[in-house]
Image (cartoon, rainbow, N blue to C red; front, side):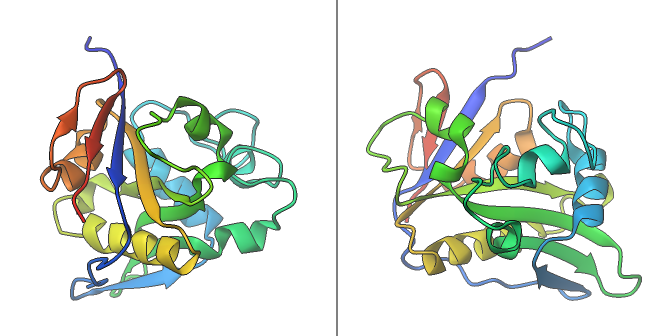
Length: 195
């Protein structure tokens, strides 16, 4: 089995963020949807046990409860999750994709492992928990989710954005790597996204 190595992809600025262009037949909703997040992440996440409750990485309560995972104790959950996006299929209302915009400083694990390479964690946005149901992958849904998160980062006053993923999540890597200037072969692997 191949090792699952962390990969950091960085967008050096948030000028000219690609427009959010949602494919026909889908809608994009802004705001938290716990049930949709758990459902989508359970189907798409290859390494973590996803659940609504628990203290482990991958549980909604751990990741999004104030004072846990990604949400600082002094940030109200509704404020932190205002920049969570969920993609829905119009015909049935089925949630099929999700992504979240956080400040990098909100996620101590990402801050602690991120390559320095000029990243200012105070002005960096963390593209986090991006996932699309396997049956809907390859339909161009990740790009509008990613663009929505980048636009949210810009609106939050972030200057740069970083996606932390791993080599075991090739869909996340291919979403960004096609636009990478050059990979940095440090451990962990880091790719720099062009403007």
